[in-house]
Amino acid sequence: MISIRPVSDLRNKFPEIEETVMQSGQPVYLTKNGYGTMVLLSLEQYAALTDDVELRLDEADRAAEANGKRLTHEEVFTKARARIHG
Image (cartoon, rainbow, N blue to C red; front, top):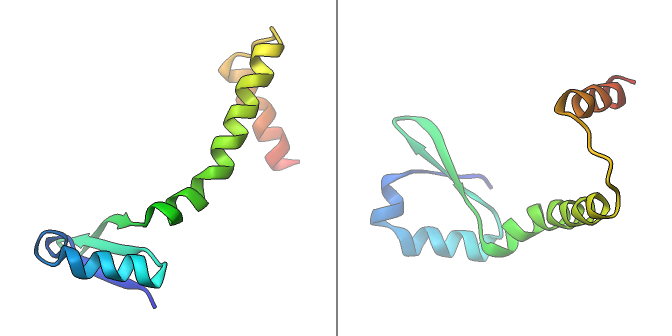
């Protein structure tokens, strides 16, 4: 079940929000003046979302160190667009 709370609850009801995040394993969405403002995740949830990205960035860093070739931003985005659009 999606948990949406006003951002003021972060200050006023932190233990309750923390318990929701930790026990449910689901994020809590916070709003301010009726609009989404942030999402709270446990460290485990955050790691699950970012670990693969971090590993791939590390691989890219190692590949860049091993290869002296450098591309301009235009070359990178042209190649990326070509892969996306076929």
